[in-house]
Length: 108
Image (tube, rainbow, N blue to C red; front, side, top):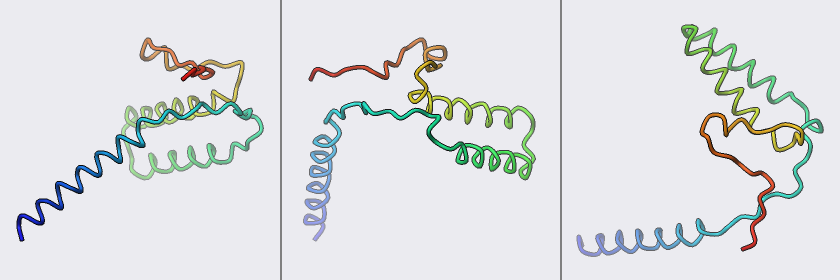
């Protein structure tokens, strides 16, 4: 009985590995139709930051963690919407010394 369980576990692990390798190696083409950010409502962002404000007030975080929560959330929001703002740039390169090319073309 123990051997059959071991064989089933090994078979499951091998099949899982093959499945992960098969689906994770496919290149996804970049989305060419990026809509402008101004076409969308800001309700989600407003409600999210209202939730953050009420959470920091309710949990009584000290000032430094509260500032960090808002800073990281603001950076994440900006990086999320920057592809829809053609005249703006990502700030990723200022934090990592790397660049992100949103319109990068894959010839593969």
